[in-house]
Length: 273
Length: 269
Ligand SMILES: Nc1ncnc2c1ncn2[C@@H]1O[C@H](COP(=O)(O)OP(=O)(O)O)[C@@H](O)[C@H]1O
Ligand SMILES: [Mg+2]
Image (cartoon, rainbow over all chains, first blue to last red):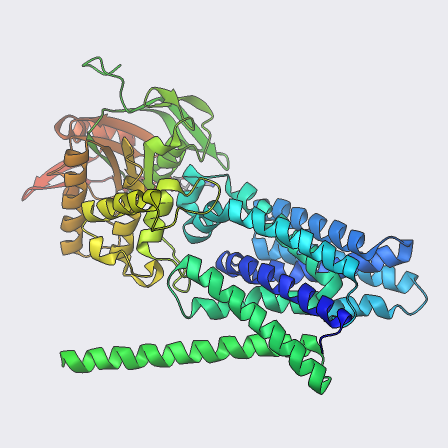
């Protein structure tokens, strides 16, 4: 379980989990979960295009996810954000289906990008993942306060901070970077679930934004480690384990806090009565 | 220049705004002196929110000039505090009242906020607590803001607007959707903030009555036009009939002021 190739897997997956945990706080807080779904799927189309023209997968993923982020940002200025996101991902997926049809040979490596291949990450891929992850974290640290403000009270932030469209596009570009670092090593499904469920679960447990960022990151790393270990032993796919594990964690915490809240409320009621 | 020669905190000269082909503000003139409390009164659709958005620099006027503290809008944004009409906060967002107020202080800056234990963090925290206390919301500091009641959220938003020590505070319909006792509480808080912190306050409202005891001046709006001055000089049958461009009558009943016929236009075209 700890061979050189496995070490690469652990490293890449852990880096993706840390960055996804932090990014997810804002993705969920800003209501950008749909974009967190759209960008990795659009990036898959980029990878398909790259194999068609013989370019590197990383380049295809990077170009498509950044272009997707800019498109969502630009369209979202004029109309509703979910519609802008839907239009963008539809166009990208349509292009992806065309690319796959044009490439007559069967391309299993492209499908691996959807659900993840994880075992067999090269050292070069790990280096790229770590660098892009570092850049994403620095960008999020710099944007922390403007992002938090415009997520919580957009009307007020718009009067004092960066223009809302600029803040939103900056965040989408960071999410495109995260997609680019993650899709080639863990696949689209895995990064999508790591962007959403750990951050959503963390919101159940704390009222402090900083703590929520930290908890979400811890959850993301824990989910990935458990999923890799279980997958190694049982041969169940990692994508399935991460996706269902994250959703289960969220469901369990949500139910637990609801029950605790109701118990607390009835206790208070009892004391008063 | 205002009559006493000082630069007013807000000076609007012939400001016009057209939205979707409609004149929403029509040659509006308005001056507000430092430390004055002004009521921006008008019925729904009169243009109150649009006027505030123009002052905030969120909307560019088609014509006219706006100076805040003697400078064009947008140059010194910390100078103006703002509490929007609709406060929609996500109940599931993990953020406390004190975090929100802290963002009012430095939310536009890049980088992480200072740690609570550092000296800058402690200074930030005391500014935040001071702002919450000034609106009587100190006990809300640790509460998740999305789970507070509407009135409590509004106080936190006032603290957020005040924490940067603005010279002008804009509040859009802060009395709408409050019960009667909360209305007089909020009015009292705003009057005290205005007096004690020397901040000019502009409050929009569709009913002038709750503000009558505390208003220094009134800015009365009808169909995008505005008349301003001391309440007694503006809220008069002749002045308001001119503003509405049809006859209305100002009635004083038991200490309350009613403007009869103000809605006539919507009934007969
Ligand atoms: N973006 C817009 N496009 C077209 N008309 C608008 C827009 N915003 C506001 N209006 C119109 O401008 C008028 C004034 O609106 P508003 O300033 O919100 O009034 P108030 O705040 O006094 O109720 C209304 O008739 C409204 O329908
Ligand atoms: Mg309004």
